[in-house]
Image (cartoon, rainbow, N blue to C red; front, side, top):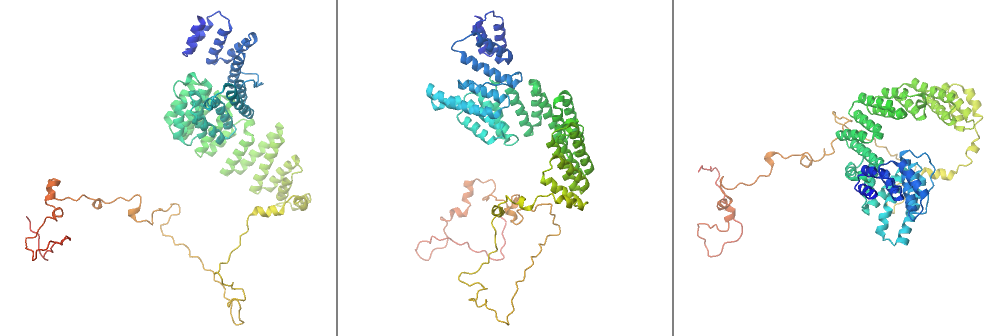
Length: 584
């Protein structure tokens, strides 16, 4: 009964108790060992799980060998993600689409993304053929089975920078409405990563799906940690600072492997709140606890200071890096740019000189050294320091003597202070015919674009003024040729209080009542017509309204004839001028 008890505990997600039950058993049959391997897989103890599967495959041979091999490759994939798999060789087995899929995932875990994408495409084709030809599955069943393979293809495309193609795959998978909540969570998480800081409302809805309750039993801790990290980044980009702080703290406590990322997010929040000092102290602690990531951490601190406009502080942090990092090409370029922006040209020149000396001393790549010499020469030429630029170009020419561009720059530098050297070097320039031998003149002219000419407009049927058929075209000796006088454009007159820094109101030419901010005056608002005395109901007021009793009103004077009254409107009698209203 040990097997049955452990299996029931495993099925109700009580994995710890199931492992205790299995471990207490002395049974070593294949079924109890396979159950133990499954429990270890759920506990993410992949090394022990891998050993059990390998032992079972060696000692047993039955109809379930293919399934065991598939499970063992799935364990190998998680070991590669975890970094505990010392063997980087991957033998992809294509005997079934499940084995081929797991082999593709292992390639992906090792960073071989392009190979993984090709294998996943082969997996999809193999899966479709097997389900349609062998199983007789419907199109819906095929799409449901292929969905996870397609989503993994989208992940590969996303890693390769082809986000549009990945987005199309994710949306196509969502249209088929997969039933697997784990697959839905992964798709929505990847879509949030594609959105980044844009389309925040859509990202929030998708993140709720990715963090739905009950997924802790269907996703690995690695997958859950990445989803929680994306949730923190989403809160940061949507300016939910309190949520971001609480989620970052929870991320660090639940997933200690991402404690560094959580601290960096907190430091970014402090920097955005205008507290660069506190942010720097947080990052400094992180650099001490994670020395292998110190360079990245200090570059984050540099970016925070640059966002605050503190160029000097950012430069000091980069100058404090160790020489192996300080004299990298990108960091040297950033330091020189900051020095030039601050006007410290001498400091920029010294940084380039020190970088060149360090690379020469450590005998690094000649390509890096050539790039540094070229940057130094360009800098000195812009500053007008031709002798120093010429010295840099001479060193660059030693590395690559056949470079014509370097020779041309060197002649330009010599021409500013040593004309004889410039003339002697100019003899080494290749002939113009050799340089222009491969130039297609027609293609070069066509690349300029269409040539436009000014068109003279004239009436239809009228001869041009220069033709002899026109009476104005033939000039007599006494005629004087008239020249067209160019009219000068009047300078625009601006008001005295004109401020060019303030954009004018686009509604300034509209009447006030048509503008957006116009509000009617109180006395001009529509009022209801009050008829009758105060407190009288509408039925009683109608009795005193003469307009509603116009058809029944009869004059007291007798009519002179028995003809009926006309149906036209009656005019009110005019009051006598000078009359005064009497108080009633």
